[in-house]
Image (cartoon, rainbow, N blue to C red):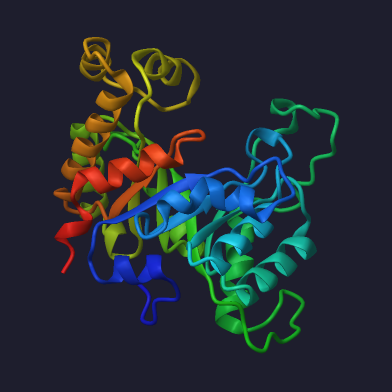
Length: 306
């Protein structure tokens, strides 16, 4: 899928290891230490750490600055880039600048609508969508030129990712959507949360049968559940997410629900690692970087690498 892996994440995936990425949100602080205070716990644990870009349409330190601070401190970022806030010129410039700063993993997203944030009257750009951004980044890398035809020397180094939703292999199986994203340049996918191990098995089996895992890597979304209450909130508020009743009941019966949530997540990681077509997992927990680091360590999967 890539002959010369451009990043640690790409190398881990190319080697056939079960990759584990995590996620962080940039701080509301003009301080590099504020970034490191959040992500230091993931150093040497996560293969890469996603940096959200204006998540929920709220202002934080810029994702590019946050990712640069991380890269300078040997914590590999995955820079999320949304098309909501910047036109194509600004986005292309950020790609070139990010690569120059040692940032080579990217996740292309459209972004949340401004109405979701705390400045809903701010202008939305959306000049291009995430698919067009991906195509432009692919061509900047592979053709060593901007869309205008101007040369890039050297071209940016990019390992390109997209988001996906685990789906049941039924009549609504999104084969066309998946192939379109791969044709646009997607090399790895990070999915929405999926806490149903059997559903992940069915999803990955369909990916293998459709030939998609020969073209891109798939990392399944997961995370440590803080409580039964938070699991129910996810079911009610996150599109496409369904925490099984058995997991909620297990959380309810635990004396320490946070610890039980970590244990459940570690067990699911171990299960994911045994599924053909599942190249890794993407761990998400709002302000839960330390919990994600503990889950990765407690899963024992890092020790299985040769």
